Image 1: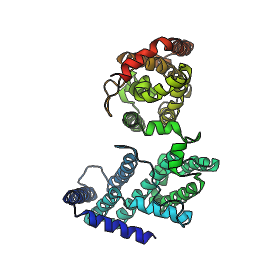
Image 2: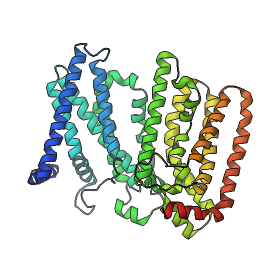
Image 3: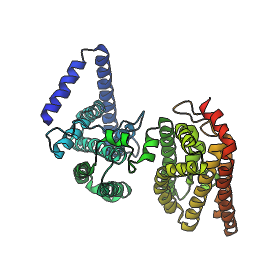
Image 4: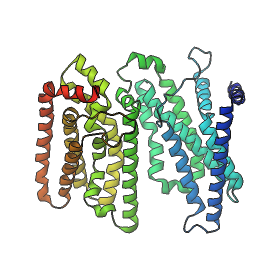
Length: 442
């Protein structure tokens, strides 16, 4: 069955070459993969001879593997998210293992992955040393990235049994441990490159067994456990792209700060004002959630027509915030704690700033909505006043680091947060017309 699938793919490819546009695109992709493979091989060969400073061939290869994994995962949501496809209907007389195997093989034969595989092979051909090692590690990284992508999509696209949700959560333990403690596992990288794809294949197959129904039924049925809030983010290209850019920028900055602290004992921006703006979850709000109804105006209209009370709408924003906040906290807090060794300050600063920003996001989304016209609208994604107040509040809260007397700010911030929440509920009946004029008519 799999051999026949590969035959159909090859036949479709060659039939597609009858179109001059397809011929041109194929030649362009092939030449690009060849050029990048040749260039990378040249860099690795020069590093082998010691002609590129302190860069070692293994370090360059490792960065290449990380780039391959990152590119494949990024392609899942950029330029748009495509739900995971079931290639054969469930009523075909095939076992679950056969269905799963065909789905995996079909994913791995997509043009993008074939192009990356060609790049790896070309680079391998031009290398002077470690040809087989690079080929093995590169293809392993490619397969691992695609299986990780499928793992993410199992969590987004399907309604699963309870054991499936637990398995999905547990399945991330080993990849996360390998990424965090990479230095400890690096001597065994070849063994791990063999075992990790096998592990992900097994996990994927077990998750396949826990799916309750196919994706079409799930989406049309609107099941309670269908990860609605995650889908509202993933399927919103405007919010998804700007959040992705914000996360990447923030995490790279914090990781760079941690590496600088470990090597030089210093922090970026000397650990002053600008640093703590990025240490807080501020970027989530200045980019998106201070203007939640600008990004999810159809959801607001649905709430207004069905309920008309702002309390339910604030609950929606809070639930929508859960996943971005979890991602931010899981990465940010460990890096801050490792860099600063001040558990009390870090936890209080992060939690209080989060409460303040969430509560005020309800108010800003109501009072100062902005129309979102383009997919990547960095400028004007939220109002200037809301951004300014949020930044000043976070900077002021960072004074907790200077002296214990500033801990008196915490009750004040909590009081302001409560008042902002109550104020937004009281104002809604009057100010909801601002939303109509700003986000629906523009």
